[in-house]
Amino acid sequence: MTALDLAARALAAVPGEEAEAVVHSELSGFARYAASEVHQPTLVENHVVQLRVARDGRVAGASTNRTDDDALRDLARRTLDAVATAPADDEFPGFAPPAETAAVDGYDEATAELPPAEQAQIAAQAIAAARPLQLYGYVTSGVVELAVATSGGLAAEDRMTDANVLALVAGEGVSGYAERQAVAIGAIDAAGTAEEALRKAEATRGGHEVEPGAYRAVLEPYAFAELLEYFALDSFNGLGLLEQSSYFAGRIGDSVFARNISIAEDPLDAAGLPKSLDFEGTPRRRVPLVEAGVARGVVWDRGTAARAGEESTGNAIPVQNRRYGPAPVALSVAAGEAGSVEDLDEAV
Image (cartoon, rainbow, N blue to C red; front, side):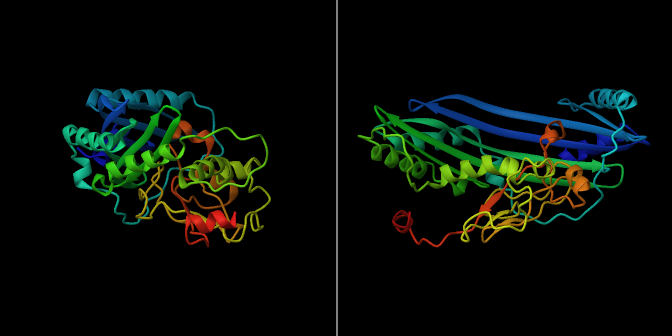
């Protein structure tokens, strides 16, 4: 049974109601390693079914991890009980209408069917490449399905795979980090990831603390990405813009960064982990955020878009976390002018 089939069954449990069913299914494997020993092999199979009903200006819902008929009937009962006593929601924009989603290539059969023994072999390759130092981290792979169905006729689904290898090489006074992520496990070189972490660890040998002060620095991609992620959570968030907590508040159309900075939300980019729809069933699309240093926009879900007089960009997160607003999930930064790390170092 697909996630969309399960969503349709949940929707059928509340006939005659204005309703939405969202199903998020995961089947994944996880192999952790510490001190170059594989441990805690884990297999996860989970299905989350969320049902919401809108009635007379009130909206409420419930969720379950069980998928049998009795569980779905109980889910329907709890949802109807909740909506009967829910307060009115004047800002509810309605459930998403049917819409065509873009075709994305985010699924790899070999990754979806990767057996635990092969995942352990990939972990062993990474461990061997980290010698003589010790390796910490994990190898994970899996398949995720997202489906959204509504009483208004929306029936959309997305099937995605992803694989990740994380390598932290450490020894006395040294450490190095590297990570790879892709739609297909075959696109990841586990040994190469560990070797990168090993080279960094060796480069830290003999390192020492620096005096407090202001320093120019060249950030490697991992550090830059993490800083950008924290900045984006609020500043590229439509709710943050509405509540004036975003750095972009009052700055849309202004020059906010250097001219060589361009950033976009690009969930359809095949170089990342492409996704065609969000947790409201809205098609995802590319959103320019910064162009040549100028603030151009933020991402929206249906609720924040309705308040701002905008259209959703397809960035809704699961309903239980939606109070935090829409989230950018696939940031893309245009290449700068430096031709190499050495050029960048010289410029800095």
